[in-house]
Length: 313
Ligand code: TXA
Ligand code: MG
Image (cartoon, rainbow, N blue to C red; front, side, top):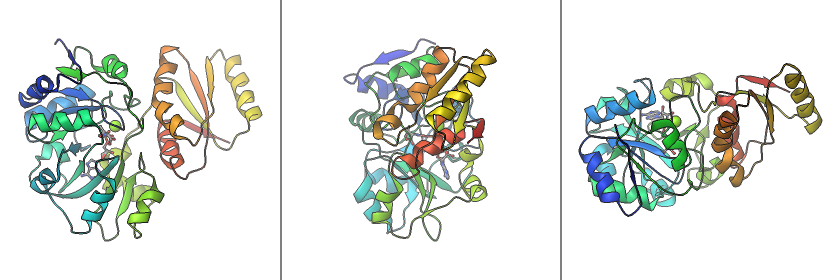
């Protein structure tokens, strides 16, 4: 299949592909999404096939206005203030499903919904006239795409269209919160920090109970964000310790790269891109240091942990 490349001025054409049941990758403020008409099971199935994604891992439904939210889900009244504070933005809410097909929800009675803070994404959804189901636009298990080039590397010739744009501003996926439980729970940390959310939702819990989040969010049980290179998380390691590990791996003829993590927005934005670059450079081992888990640091450490195959200190 020939993959059509669209500019931000050709969103009507891209939307037409969505309406025809095809896949179109589009930028959001977090990462690129791989979109299909959320109301069309046949179209949604193509997402799972293209990504190699297990069918029990549900997708986020992207909307462009609040009317769409009420069409697809049952929303508790408390949700209003959260939406007012954070939408459009890097926050996904889990609510009771009303009309979204099971191919999207993985058979759960809930649905994940997000209104992205990206002019291109909002316009695409509006032009398509339907909500758009979209996971991150990467082959399942590998780092998410934060640029047009990443999407092309993964899906050229496999999907109908890609919308070309500059880098995604945040570079890390949305924060996912479950609003169907007694107390709202963070299921995945992300672009919106726990502290910012807590200011509006004082009863929000950040669970570290892995078994619970795993049961609640099917995606959590799969390996994520990993490049081909083996990632070793060096917990609280000094620079000297990192250098010592590097020498050890180089002695074994492994091309080794040190990444010093930083608790900054800039680092979050570059993380997946750095992982992908390591594969291009044929790096065998990435030694990555840890950061404190507050602010954006929480999401950064979540991604590093899930990508790592080993943790040392
Ligand atoms: O920033 C983002 O969230 C990006 C952009 C494209 O919007 N999307 C994204 O989608 O990261 P994906 O599919 O890579 O991650 C969605 C996560 C998965 O962990 C999935 O299991 C979880 O959301 N999820 C989806 N529906 C759910 C539901 N009904 N209940 C619990 N978790 C759900
Ligand atoms: Mg993903």
